[in-house]
Image (cartoon, rainbow, N blue to C red; front, top):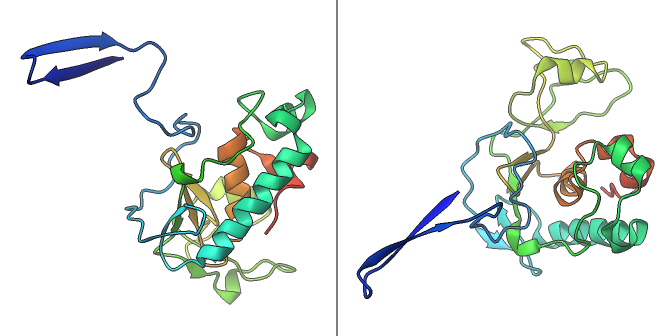
Length: 200
């Protein structure tokens, strides 16, 4: 990667080769997840603990959920070290993570097109869900849900870009996506230890 810097007072251009580094100060700028949404992100508020928020989400509740996940992960994984079983079950890319969540690097976005699942689309034994966007039908099929044109497969949570957590007003999957972002574990629900930190 090349970085070009121009200093007008010195009247010269300097080229610097940056090896395996990024110009970003965002600790979550690891490009771990495919962007499944492309919402415009414009934070309109910050929580008391510094998390940027876009949408009409409860700021204190956002902080409460982040605090609960942070405390659970630190308690469950001392020093942020993931054991081999958790790494395998959770599909984790890295063996460890920072136990302090970098709140200033995160934006929590309320999906502007969220909606309740239509009553005729709610599977038997399930409650109505808040959803948004369009998800691939095979992901719903894997959960036993048959997507149709009238009942499309949709997201309940997502990570957009490096560290934008897309959620719905009830923030049902915010904790799950936060765990994915912080730990690099793509399937925390498949690991008993990681799933234990999913605190709605």
